[in-house]
Figure 1: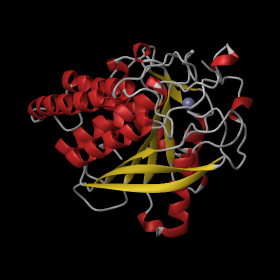
Figure 2: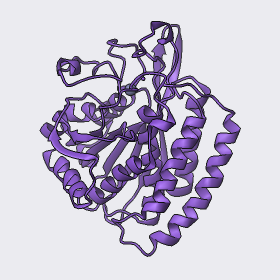
Figure 3: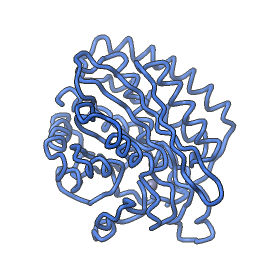
Length: 340
Ligand SMILES: [Zn+2]
């Protein structure tokens, strides 16, 4: 989740007194290892999920297998180290998304866009895993950002501000949930088409630079410029920072204004599942990847836990997250998909 706000000057998110920040640790490992581990684990748990899922209703993903699947993806992502644009971890994350898409999606679409960064031009890429669904129609877009923040600028020690965060929760958790969804949707085709979109450049620019939400802004601009409105997403659901072991998700204000019915579906599903992580109260106004879609009139909602002390610090590490939190959000999204 970006610290800067939407580039075209929305109301400032930190004008909301509720908005706070949060702490993090660096780890960088050999990517070969991460890649191989993922491939092997993905295959094993994938087969396991297939066996159990065949017995379960489509809206009830088996907890044990999908908790493991989601957690394995998050471990694999954090093993890659920081995943800020231009880093090795960033390109290896793209490879992972491509590989999962190749295994599970009906179609993988890459949407590159150049971003000027000082003297250099970075090639950023939105990656989209498409599932055609059993009935034709406008797709449900489920999105998250896969980039991590290049600056640990919420560290109390300003000498650490230039270091990239690991982003287990901020960048990792949403990506893990969407990769798990790809496996689930492969085994349980949805009714409506579903497009899982992994946005780049969400957390890119320095604080208050306005250089944030780059991938989602680019995606929304492309819709406006070149896509018939009849083909636009039916709605957009963004997940971000959903791995915190003390997960607390509230109804977010921008989502409530844009798609109250979608927020209702999500919280109703959580209530029926008796998930304590979902707090049925309104809290926070957040400018995340759902906001560019709200601006062009597509009903859009965000699931986020912004009560996360390690936010934008070197302490945003794997041990701050749990499989239970990932699975809670994953199961609510799966349930909601059946009701949209
Ligand atoms: Zn962030």
